[in-house]
Length: 229
Image (cartoon, rainbow, N blue to C red):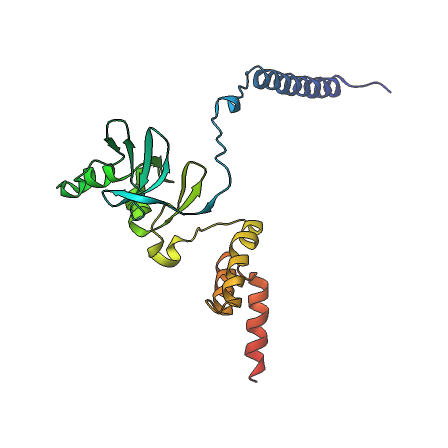
């Protein structure tokens, strides 16, 4: 059987197309793999300060309302339990270094006042590319959203950043089911057992994050509407 010239051209064009695609894919893979992936994990400082314990200050003198949490022959560390501000006293010359300038409450400008009250600040962009700021004092300390732990020769402070007073609006729009079951539902069930929360609270969160499929809703609606007939 003789193959026509038209059929030959069709197959030739197909082979050329397949060849071009294969070469393009190969070139792309070579291009991607040509980049050097740097591992910066060895540059990350990891500190192990030991086991966290219930906060227990050292009995002794106070410095501007701050309690002593650690002391050596030369230095003493003090912390304010209400603001987490710290002070370090040099016992050799009685010089005191403050994390927040003394008299900051008299600063007339709110932004400067709250900025200097904050140990850490965050700058980021939201989903519409607007620049946002979060300051530790405004978004954590002022609302009492922190916990102080005692560790060896010091303290560890865990902050929860964000105003939780906004209620249900503080909850994320999306959450992984595994994370929800582990970190959210487990805590809610503990509160239900303790009488702090009710079962309806858990049902509300389930409906918000894991809504009932539309087909199920229609079936229930149909069943309920026919029930009264």
